[in-house]
Amino acid sequence: MKLGRSSNGIEAGPPPRLAYLLSIYPAVSHTFFLNEITGLRRLGFVVDVASVNRPELAAGTGSAPEANELKTTFYIKAMSPAHIFLVLLKTLLRHPQVVFRGFRAALSLDPWNLPAMGYALFYLVEALLLGDWLRQRGHRHLHIHFGGPVATVGMLAALAWQFSYSLMIHGPEEFYDVEKFYLRRKVEAASFVLCISDYCRSQVMKVCDPAHWPKLQVVRLGVDLTKFQPAPPADRRDVIEMICVGRLVPAKGHLTLLGALAKLRRRGYNLRLRLVGDGSERSAMESFLAKERLDGSVILEGALNHEATRQKLMYADIFVLASFAEGLPIALMEAMAMEIPCVSTFVAGIPELIRDGIDGLLVPPSSEDALSAALERLIADIDLRRRFATAGRRRVRELYDLESNVGLLADTLKSCLERSAKK
Image 1: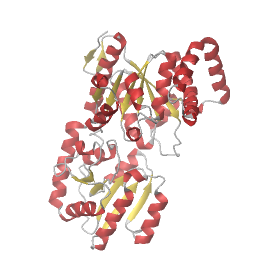
Image 2 (image 1 turned 45 degrees about the vertical axis):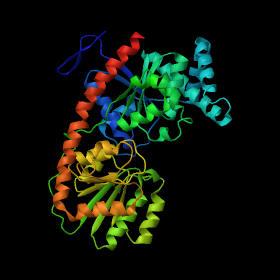
Image 3 (image 1 turned 90 degrees about the horizontal axis):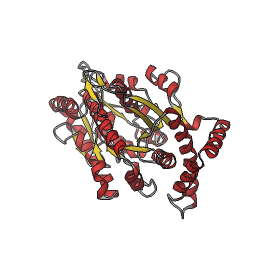
Image 4 (image 1 turned 180 degrees about the vertical axis):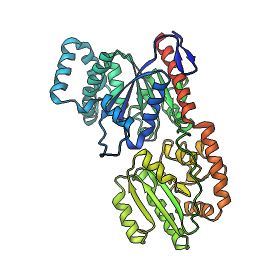
């Protein structure tokens, strides 16, 4: 049945119902999940959320909406062993064909690879638990973010329990080893696939048969422009404040950034860099800072919640992200929305967000010289910073406004679900 839209969302008929599957929810580094889901609910969707993992939020770091999601989300791995056993036993006795289909699907993923088969059977257990939860909630369709292991669980659940599923692909991890992540099978078995950028769509097109290309649609992410607004200008002629928001992992290029910063410091620039995030590369970064005597110029803020991060952004003159690999960083969109001039790299979907020389500056990934030169341009030219600041917010308003893009997502989900239901 075709649904109409009223001024405040959905009308004419029952509200659309949708189940989400995520790897970890709510997550500090993926607040766009929460924004997306709450946005869909405001538009009239009934959204139930399942998460493979339960987040470990430190006391006081979570917001009220996150606390509420913790109460209502179904966490697969949080189930007790006794409960897991009972659900599996019930499924085997009442729905043996489900278990048979699941085993057949799991063992066919990579039948000559024993370690992969072992993982597939673990994923199958999670898939059977997920499918039982979906059946109890009355869902016949599952929407999955990311194309890695979480999508393997979702695909096996769909094949075993015979319901449909869709994917939201971000990249880049699933593009590096498409065989390991069974990306082709996931895409071709899905009812439809949403991609966060044109670049992302091209990578999915590369791995699947052209017959499946029509089911691939670009639906961009977004940020709340009412929340991420320009901060009042600050007069800090003595020091340039730079900030980077991203996990401390090799793919973010932080060591390249620190190398560029060291070059600028040696040229006499008075700079302070705040790094918001945490991860496996922290110790290597601390060693570099000590070796280059940059301890006083770089502040490792650790992982911060969304509001605390926004507060740090308010005092930044320049945002920099030296990534080697990305999907399309929300952190860049947020900085641009706050009229902070940005420097990043020619990687994945970033050039769709930042047009080099128009909305900010882009440099080749891994080049300390190019990165330090771009930063030096902004440090030395306040008028250029102002021009990029204005252009950056305008770019986000045009293509990455959360309210507009959640509305587009809602329309896309409705039309895709309607087409899927008719098949």
